[in-house]
Amino acid sequence: MLTAMLAPKVDRLLRTALEEDIGSGDVTTAATIAPGTPARAQLVAKEDFVLAGIGVARRVFELLDPQVAFEGLIADGQTVRRGEVLAWLKGDAASLLQGERVALNLLQRLSGVATLTAAFVRETAGTGATIVDTRKTTPGLRALEKYAVRAGGGGNHRMALYDGVLIKENHVAAAGGITAAVTRARRHAPHTLKIEVEVRDLAEVKEALTAGADILLLDNMDLKQLHAAVELVGGRAVTEASGGVNLDTVRAIAETGVDLISVGALTHSYRSVDISMLFT
Image (tube, rainbow, N blue to C red; front, top):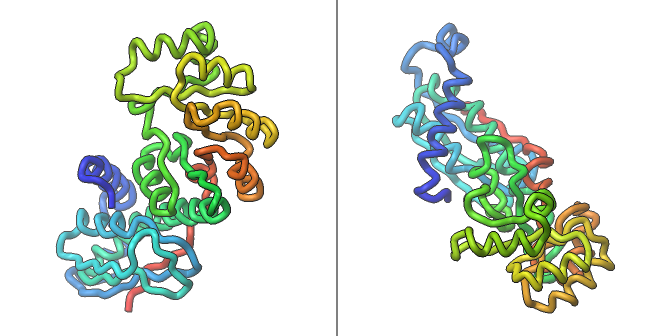
């Protein structure tokens, strides 16, 4: 589940989403259903996928109407099959209908992230490489999408600009070179943060190692370059492959011996899965 530290941020997001959808009131429900009408519903998988966000869906209804009973039947990270019931809900029909779209929007998206992540994890099984995400997330949904990556078996890269030093080509250009950038980072960054440097060729790998980088981001290197870089590093730093990663290429990239493979597609190119809420 999401940590207690993130819960307030998630609640703000959910309240904003509910306000966006309900606005001044649900005119269709008000016009067709008598107030206080009891209802029972189920969330049903319409295809196979890896579940993520069942607790988020529950929280939507808790914020909307604490009297709604929500019984989750499957845990995040589990594979569900088409036709399986994910959860039962019971409460005021109006509350169920008003929370339906927000809950499903998030549950479908987060499960899409987890499902795509799980596919990358399966492709790299046994190689020793870890699949990680990036900051290429949907604005406002980063905490949830990164949670979904974990549910799918992947790992998280830095959460944001504040919790990791990642020196990229523009930092290098502005600082006057890799060595200058790393030296300045060592002097000014908190000692608890590791320093990662983006490198594009073996010369930059050597310079970053000499400068004392903890992690090397091997950017858009081909397989031959990745093999050579991993051999050159020789365990002196963590190696991360990035760029040109998809389900067709990830296995070969993992077999070069890199420690991490960052995949932006996990959070920017996933497909939402198909889930329905049905009254019973």
